[in-house]
Image (cartoon, rainbow, N blue to C red; front, side):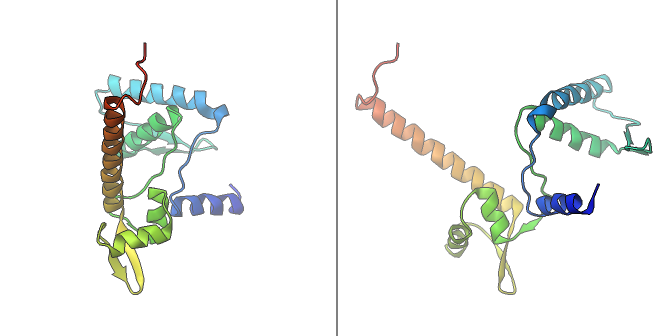
Length: 165
């Protein structure tokens, strides 16, 4: 791998940029996921002696926990979704947290200042735990869905929708 490509990959990881499979790799990923799922079923979720083979035939043992993480990655990519890997307990910058929530950094800072999401300060900089960002996102999504359901109910009661037949 050349240095420029390696730096781009490292930057994407650092910024938690979601990774998705190009269309030409989709079928291979679906096949990989099915094979990994079969291995787990046959082994009763006890994956033993998995080996990672490098591009030049070099082999190394693949720990069971890594196998299961790769299985999850393959599952998500096989569905056609993108994936971002974030260590649990990781503290994010305000820009990283804003990127996860798909909001502006200024809006996120306002949420922090209003006390709507816990955060810490490192000098002048705010830091937000990934768990808190994801919990906020889940709560926000639930509230949005409840509001949409209520608007739909009101619209149906007021005759705003024609009967679907």
